[in-house]
Length: 531
Image (tube, rainbow, N blue to C red; front, side, top):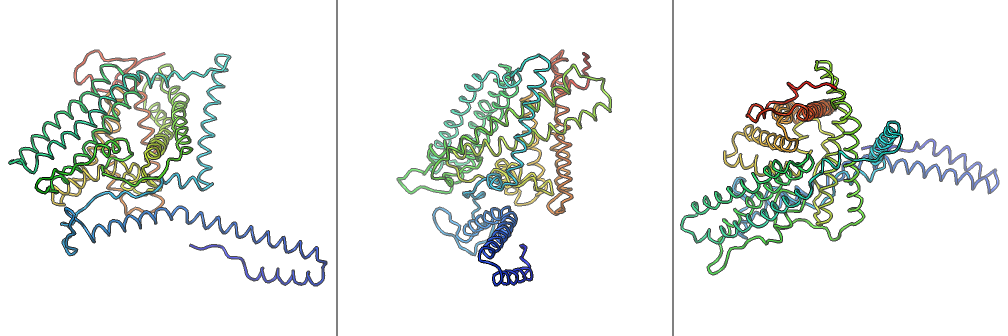
């Protein structure tokens, strides 16, 4: 890294000139010249400072995080412990304990980047676009109706029946809080004294699996279908269902092996995690259970208020994008006969709203929502994402887009698969994680929208897998970053276009029967409706 230097000849020439002026000119002129030189030097120093900060700011945080993580991991490898006893340092690597993810106190990347004025200006530009959307909506309403109309009917429709959502969430929450915890406590208290440990574990696991299937598997689907919840309310229920399943699995998966390894002394009861630590885990922004996490000493209430305002702003931002850029294109009044030309134009018209919705979902959820809960709960490890926008490979993009979910998939999907296969079939492990992730994404969209149209699954499980192997970490050229962004633009355009077409087709061409093929066949393929 280099910084600009002041040319020495110019400085010496200026000094000589100023010395001659000091000998010949009056004292007032000499002071003016010295003040001008001082101002020029201050400007030069300030410019050097800004350039140095710009070059260092983006690298310093990653370097510190990497060094701290490596130091913690190296310490664990040097002195691993089993049941409180230090193992032999020369033991084979495969026999050493592996604690998985290491939580370290660190801020979110965007919080650091927003301290740079140039990056914050981009954030201000997005706010300006939101204001333009508001003004255009008001202007169109005033021209069409002769008055200013502030109606958010689409927003109220999407979040309707919130009362049903609240009581359904309460049922899932109290079940997740009590049943897995009490089941694990009962199993742990009997495990070391029970004659058949395998039979006890299989029986307990079977009972818990049946309970999970009915309460966290079928119950949310029943609520969504039976009460005909609108889209946003459906997504709340389904996403919370997935979150509770992942959290409860992590709790059992992390706590069970510890209970099995720690044999209590005679007359002592096994050591179990506290209910308060499990309750904290259910709300803190991570899917990996630990009995303790790095904590902050105080809550920044100004940060909480600002983050809450950002979430509301993103909500209205998405509303205006749908109202101004999606509804006018795909509503029945503007429906044109299907052709290749209209389809291609519809996809390209959907690219802008698609990529804006993608960025809004990232910013609203992965940055604002998770940081809000992290701040309220004092959770100090805020690495919910990395610099995915700089990715030159899809492999790196998948790892850095959503670190919270990636950690869970890596910990309990990829690593456990390799553990069961004795570290063989790495490609099969990667493919299985991709398929599971694609199925869960498609499940959430199918239940949320109320129809089955596997666009997300096809893009994720087919193109995503191909790009993951074709554009791997060996691709470092900036050209591949352009390719990645181009693929994201096109993929978002395809999804917004096809899902919007199917949404209106489901409304205007409802199913005539409830057969299986009728339910899984997209209505937009056969629906034809005019003005």
